[in-house]
View 1: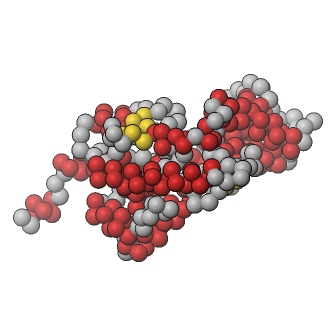
View 2: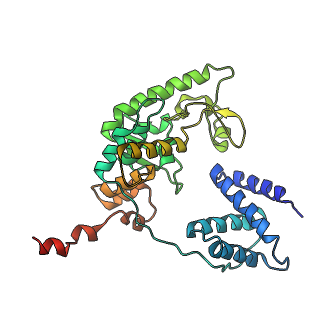
View 3: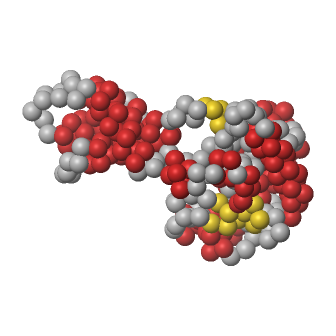
Length: 321
């Protein structure tokens, strides 16, 4: 019988074979460890499906977790059975947490302007440029931070978003007002890359495993340099070697929170809210917006439009007119 440590090692091997992200690996392994500890307390005669049902029910009833969290746990355990152990699973009918529908927070144009004015903007800490790019191009936080110099096509006025959430690369337009700032940021990134290559030994760039094997010179090629490099070398969690990575997302989150407080904004604005702002304030065809946001379904894009509010008239306004 395999130990917990051996099961986790096998899970990590399969995850890396599937080329899933480090965050997915950490998430899945965490849920699997928690599930194994829970399953040990159950009757050994129970089927795997029954154990999963009991675990999911416990999360919903006792843990009071959100529906998304419960789905995350379900996917992790399903991955263990179907991908790691290669077992077939039947129906799993545990108590499911109710999925709540929350209104997406969209900052107003004045709030976005106040936020941008408060942020610092130096080449080593280009927070204003990052936030402006999220709002001006409708990017997710990591889509902006993971941009490499080869993905920025200033002459054509667009950037290429590689390996986004749905796995399909897409194009995004560079706002005209950001072109000069992006050019300066590219020059700074090149300077950091040159300094890294003068080290002994040269400091490599972070390149995903499959790409680094396919392009062995990529860690030492300027085109693969991040547009927003981290202020100092970081350790790769899987290989434990020091590399030049992109700026961590927690730095952006922290800068955004601090800027909101300094600007006196009542409603908390996260970096992802700026993507919502782009979608809501976008003026153009909704199918163009769908392409720019990278949505698979048009229904997802339509969430950002509020035609009922635009057509509605308050009876109070009519009464006191």
